[in-house]
Length: 223
Ligand code: DX5
Ligand code: ZN
Image (cartoon, rainbow, N blue to C red):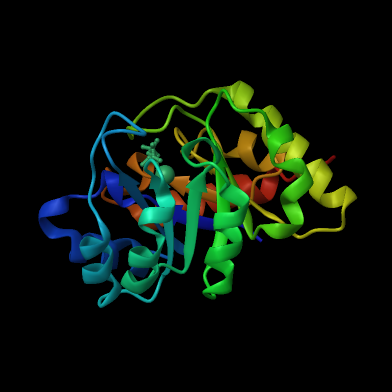
């Protein structure tokens, strides 16, 4: 099953509620919410109060991507704000797997992200403890970048391992995904697709997502 998760980083923040409704009505599955602290990544976005505000307006699954140092300081706030799934970065804290356990204990789905330079091997022994893994297909920090195709080798490694272990793991890709590049991601084994610019910057989000789903269906993982 393919899930499309539009990233609100590319939305018009002056009318965020309308922007969320626009992609929800156009058929999005999740809403990808990028939290940046200006330290783990060289950009600042917004915090839990924004998540809480849009929570009141949307029934989408909130896919919260924490690009912040020491995320253990803030996960409670994001849980309270209405996150359904929280992704923390492997590189951002001492024991990401313990934090993932903590998140799951609070009935929120847990996921761990790896930056382009981080090997997939660090996640392999822990796949059964996670609801999802996120393979960054660009350096985290900014929307609108071009995908780094080599990162998809890690998606392939993770999908093979999940299958070998009999796990229905969700594998998310984030960065530079659009109608032209999605096929590479799904062929490599990704099934949760983040897209910011591709969905929010145009006027036809429904058509974009339909095209993405068609491309995904035509390019599935073959081993
Ligand atoms: C980048 C963020 C992404 C970003 C994707 O650090 O994690 O979610 O919004 O934007 P696009 O789809 O424009 O590359
Ligand atoms: Zn993201």
